[in-house]
Figure 1 (cartoon, rainbow, N blue to C red):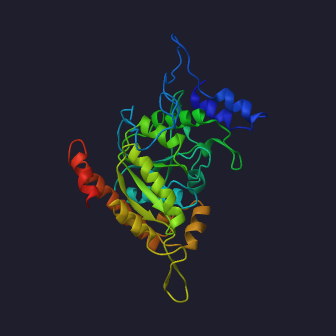
Figure 2: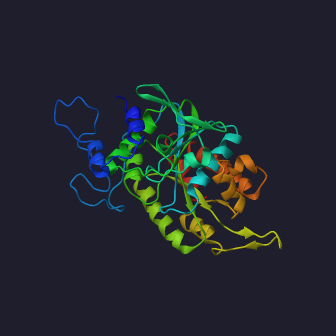
Figure 3: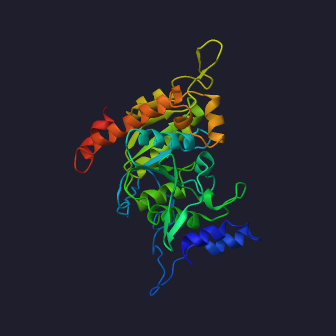
Length: 335
């Protein structure tokens, strides 16, 4: 049975014993002569080969994969924490890039709390063969999410190795086709999925998402440390929920404070890609499965997404002028 049929069966109904089910689905390492496709001798995420904790200052992660065929740029969208609107931002950035003439896909990397299926209402993907899945599409953007295989209220009860294996399959056994950009919506934190992703494929860059208040920025700084450990260039900062404009006074109200994203961007030597306003219509359209870029293309939020997408593309073009990216990254850091 193919992996994707197993995924469909795995989420078709809740197991009677979730822990036992998770143990049964956890990939394991076989000895010599094993005919299964497992990673032999790979250290667990968050630990070195000797079992010592991973220290950002001492260990650098080198991608083992060679990339995805026909996918030019893989971009991670991360924040280090949840609740900052990262999934909504990822989808709207993808749509903004698509509107600018690029071929784009979105991979929902949050295995335990996936959001992209809710935001797009994209249907369950179809199997092309036992080992290849055709992604769903939303407004011309290809989308894959584990939520497409499970019920709305069903928890993904999986141990870390199985979640990582699902991510690997979504990267390598999905028929993404020719894409200019594949955006990966990362889960909160700095753990298994993030580290495994950096080992599986070379990331062209990362977009950092924060809200204005210091509580959010503290966690983003941890994500910055993580991306540096993984040798991933950072493309810029997006400040979400930046301000609110009331209907009566047409004045900006900084509900969560002001200038946090700009301060972080200056601290890192990165561009502030956008300040996305708080808008109740973003919530309404997202809950209806209609992105802001589709439902309200002339809104301030849509303009912010469009500007961020253009800056991301320009930054990557700058980085890639040099054959190995080193000169471009140096210039980006000093921009």
